[in-house]
Image 1 (cartoon, rainbow, N blue to C red):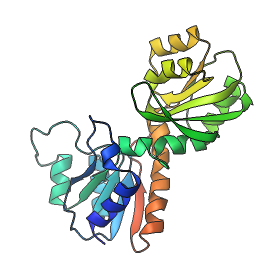
Image 2: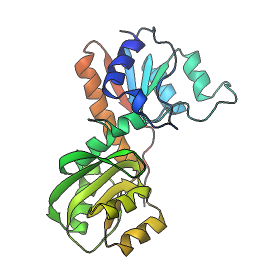
Image 3: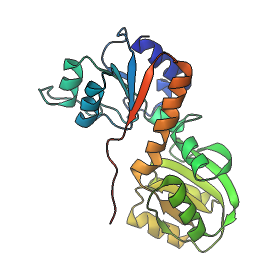
Image 4: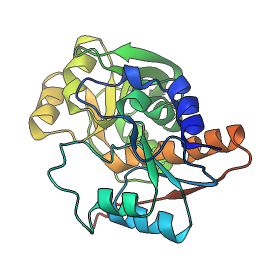
Length: 248
């Protein structure tokens, strides 16, 4: 099996051409013709990830967040790019194209928090997030369910009404509070909601739930591993969690 075979499979499902203009996705480092026997799937590619891949004799790392995003001004010993090249490890990154895709990150998040009738929703900026419904439930009960299903802490504002229609965006989606308001949703589930966005929700009596960037995105890693295992039965595919944010 070669790196390019794995990339082509992922690209067919989560086309790199669908990524946002600012993004950097695809085969970002390495050799498409490199033979692969073992793959590491992770949310990020940190030095810890590279070391873990080396220890486990992986030839390929697949991540959600791009290993190269801003322009590199140097590639020195000890840097992520240097260590990947030195250890002959290729990296495939699937970011915003994986966020918006069927079976992608927002899709997975919507299912995990218990939504039904899940459909794409085109936000005001053109980005595809998800919408769905849940049997009417109080904001506090919904927060408890999210906490259980995501195994995370939930920061939320109670809009004062039962929740039925829900807008969902994995990762940082505080900018979509207004989309939720203007399209009649009862709640927005995302992360990195800023103070003024909580105030906007309060002014419009809509509930918002901030569940953590890591927690709303790391949920894709195991489904992605299983997807690859089902397709490439001769490959050994492992996962690695780079960081888990703790709260006191």
